[in-house]
Amino acid sequence: MRRILVIRLSALGDIVMASGLIPALRSRWPDAHIAWLAEPAGASLLQANPRLDEVIVWPRGEWRRLRAERRYLALARSVRAFAARLRGEGFDLVLDTQGLLKSGVWARFTGAGERIGLGSREGSERLMTEVLAPPRDDRRIASEYRALAAHLGADTTRFPMDLALGDDDHAAARSAIAAAGVNGRYVAFAPFTTRPQKHWFDERWRDLAGRFAAETGATPVVLGGPEDRAAAEALVADSPAISVAGGLSLRASAAAIAGAEALVGVDTGLTHMGTALTVPTVALFGSTRPYLETESPRTRVLYEPLWCSPCRRRPLCGGEFSCMRLHRPGDVFDVARELMAAA
Image 1 (cartoon, helix red, strand yellow):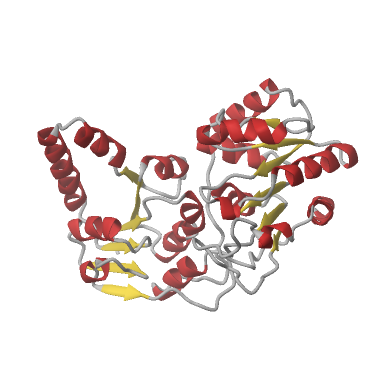
Image 2: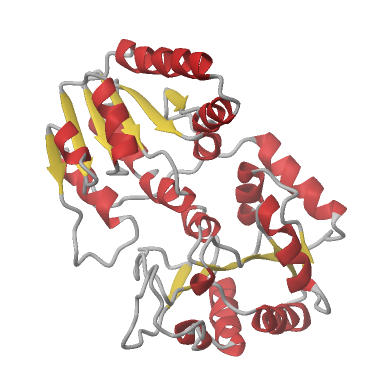
């Protein structure tokens, strides 16, 4: 293979987990040109990776804006130019790891002779030359991407996720955390997702923050995006935790995790970054269970299944989120402290 394209457009957690394909493909085809197609947010997470030759940004937001402004001619020109660029890249192999119609269309537009879809659906399977079913009984993190790499003949004895950060990212993280009043040791909290059934509870985060501050001397730092700013301020009220939610870029947030003594988070991309960056990480799962094993001695998954677990997008508990209530702050803290001591 001379030119390879990985397509994973969105879902930051999945982009983090799919990043294990980068070293796997590089090992399998050392001299290949390896590119990745993603939406802007995901692309920003990949652009510092020296093992990628190219990151192609799908300007979906710009197209939405043009459509909202009824600038249909400009939209058509932009779409044609983007499609022409993909075809002009001359890819030999395209890996559609998203498996949706929106990703399958772009895989087809490349004109690549070999297009492998991972669990393709929504009709995208008809746009592939081959479809690989994700494994159903593999408890390891990123198991579907590992299976794809193995299918391609790569060595998957180890399948480390591959996040690369620059000096500027680390400097931005240090500056923002210091500006928030933290000048020493800290632990990171990742409490926010797009689905309430995956959240833990504010009073339990405050309890956990108090334990870290009193018993380890480390300041809890709450991470999140701009849309999480108000919720983060409410969470840290009357607690020793501080919030930098909305104040860091995605890569700077990853750098903040890299500098933390530990990370506690729910099923969200920032939590998976903790494992990727080998930071002592406690993952709190309930309505979702993306994995149970990480092959990292520095990550512990806490998950106690109920009869309804995992319910994913269709909780049956009437908003009680009983599975997440099984995670008690004292138990979470004990696991985190154990991981910190081992590290």
